[in-house]
Each structure stands twice: as structure tokens, then as C-alpha cells.
Image (cartoon, rainbow, N blue to C red; front, side, top):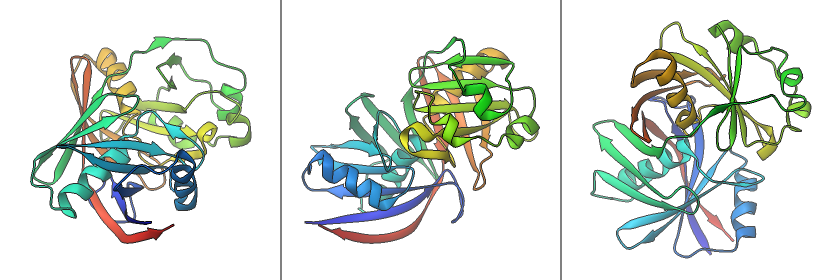
Length: 261
């Protein structure tokens, strides 16, 4: 079995920044064990697997150690591959996911826009080890469907966080989002996910389904410029649209190859 594979830097307009994702294009679905082994071998924060089904595409996402319900940057990368490498002529790509329903990606010039379901969040109490593992106590803590969101007063707070990942791995959640107002954008964030095998994700589109409703309520606005301030860094344009979140970014192809199994 030979599987085409692409590696794409998402949420960036230049190589070696943003968030790298692998995209594998399938003719049929192999076993879940094969999918997980491929993702582990790729050793990127996410590998997206695509299979055409009629006029849309089935999509699944795997970290090196687990399947996840939703991934933004790998979906952006998948749309980029279809449009730039596989001669897809449509300006709108429709993905069918197992856990997050129908997901649309629309192309507008050099930007791709994800249309994702907005998260529902509520204030919560911290689980054991959370504050200790981050070394900084937030002003507020919220919980969405899969992630915790911690609000801090300043961008410096986000920049200075040095997590103890061995301790943070004991927190049972897909991810931990830390966020604060930004100096040159509406808000900044970082995303830690050691529980699913990713210590720090460079740019996390799906986290913005939680961040955008949070900041919309706080700032009383619907459109945002956001920046994820990991070491690689990435930029996102976001909009709250009812119970959906639009997340826009650019992508660049780093590598094209094939996997032989």
C-alpha cells in the first residue's frame, strides 16, 4: 500500500513557522492501528487522513498517541493540499468528521477559512496539579468540551509560562489553553496538550473555537486578530458567527512524498 503524504505549515505565510501537519490521502480506510502507527511515525502534533466520499471528503485526525475529535491546523493543511496539489476546482471544501460533524473550508485569495462549531464554556474549579504545573495562577479558569481555558492579565504572563509537562500530563483534558490580551492583536494564547502526546502545539485552530466565544463576551466584539505565541508562532483571523466560529489562515507546503506499507 502506497499512501501520498504532504507536510504543510499551517497558519503562516512562510515556511518554518506556523504549525506543521501531515496530510495522508487514502483510497480506503486501513485499520485504526495503522492510522495511529503512521501518526506516531510522522511525529507531528497532528496527521490528517482524507478519503474522498462523493463530492466531499471524510477526515480523521491523530496525534502521535491518540485520535482527536477536532483539529484546526490539520484541516487547514488538508484543504491546502486538495486545492494546491490535487487539482480540486472548488472554492469550498466539505469535510465529514466522525465527532464534529460537517466542516467547511472556503478559499478567498490566499486565505483559507475554517467553519467550525463554537465551543460552550463555563467557569470551573481547577483539577489537581493544574496551577502547580504551570507555575502561574490565572485570574479565571473555564472549561469547554475538551479543554481548560485559563485567563491571565497580560501577554508577559503567557510568554513566561514554563510548564512542568510531567505534572501537566496528569491533568485529564485534551488541552490547556492559556490566554491574555495581546499588544499587537486582540488576544494571544498558547496551547499545551501532553495528555494526548503534544507538549506544546505551535498553532491550534480548534482551540479558537473556545477562545473566540470567551473573548467575544469579554470584549463585546465578533471579529478578532489572534496570535498564538509559541516558539514557531502563528496568526489567525477569527469571527464568531452565531454558534459557529470562522478561523482563517494561510498555509505553505514543506514536503511531498509517499508512505509504503
